[in-house]
Image (tube, rainbow, N blue to C red):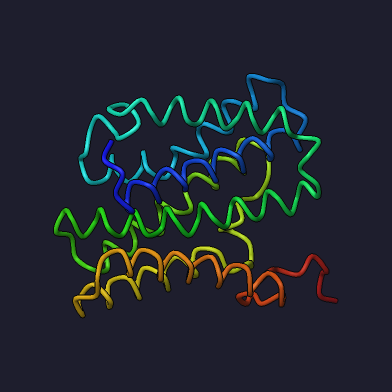
Length: 209
């Protein structure tokens, strides 16, 4: 694999999501097999959906086994150093946020490389960034973050939009990657820190008299 900034970011996103999956599995007290499965599907879920939608098959991790070895190694390290990772929930949030930012940008970039419409590229980036976390949460018997009131997919959409605009303006690719990745991560960190959320609607359980 050529060590371009794009590929490095893709590997970084894989590492971040593999760790977040392993941490989530350990938090739910799953066995060793369960930890590896959750770590794996979290890391490759978004990319697999992306490649399938654009017809890029076999999907990336099947053609390049470095992803499988990397996910396995990272999961093992997460297990070994589990007692060194303080504040499990905070660590899970941090790695999930990093993976979200990186994979959003790789998804948008691949959409552009395939000549897709800008709106489709943004949607592809959003799915790439969020789908691994959706699978992780479902398998861990939790409501996925994307379906709660937290700003999650919205950060991906905004980052993807800025990516497309910068691309149309002819900005250097590496600058676009770094700027938009940090933007998605920053938005996610800020909205959680200051408890900013989208409005939500629910049906009251109380019966009207």
